[in-house]
Length: 345
Image 1 (cartoon, rainbow, N blue to C red):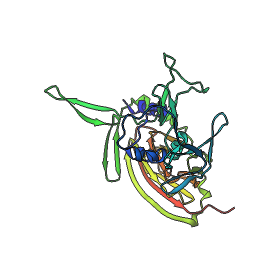
Image 2 (cartoon, one colour; image 1 turned 120 degrees about the horizontal axis):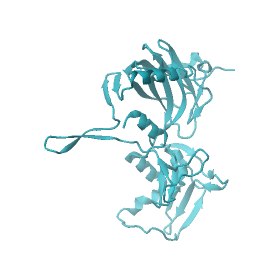
Image 3 (tube, rainbow, N blue to C red; image 1 turned 30 degrees about the horizontal axis):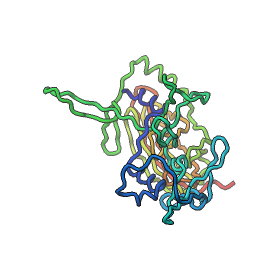
Image 4 (cartoon, rainbow, N blue to C red; image 1 turned 90 degrees about the vertical axis):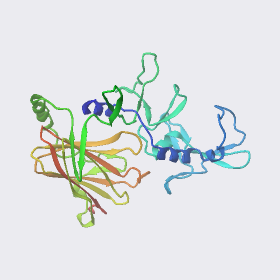
């Protein structure tokens, strides 16, 4: 599968896969009672509880930091108020805590949240019901809902030996990648000269300035002039050089500092396109900011105000994807900066 096809799948909600660390974290949040269930097998699918269920007694913290205080409720799409945490006291007097599924997905920064699926009889994290532009839920030929999920797509490539046996030679995108120090060189599908020229003419119309005011997670893109240069704290990535048909890099920032900045220096012979996104912590999907064009030989600074909100320590990353408008390889230097304060008004 060429990258173009893979990107299309990405934009159309490709399947989701959570790591074991996230599963352990989910278990800790959703079922403290599991600790006493070791050794029991085949639990009943349904039944009644002989203990007491209450709400509003406990909040939610993540990695030692409060995310939702005790008593917090969640407003549904229909306007109902539902508790985020239930406390169940069993007949022995022991307390157990259960987190509402969508709340757990939000706290853990899971792409697409959570949905109940009748076909699986499960709460599915990282999956959502597919819908068209009007909001109508899509169905298959049997009338069952179609689901989109944020699992990362892997392509497996094999090679058959002379004896007829197959062996895996690569897992991942159908492109090759060579990394040497700070330089990344990638190769992918080739375009004809006519296709390259038509693509270049179209992409040269891309704006050279980002759209300010767009918010994704804890980041809001702003005019760099909003940052107080006197509160500059330095560069965490300082002029790292990259070269290739496509350059991808993910930056981490300290969420307690007020501003973050990405500095993109186009050192190549051709204009480049820079896409910035906030990747989800769990699930292969991201929240996009505007794409801009950086002319050859020019430098672009993209600034982001950081809102110290829920789950900031998980949502502290920004990813860049850089491509050329034509046939030349991308040649860039990337830096990340942080500032303590904004300009006082």
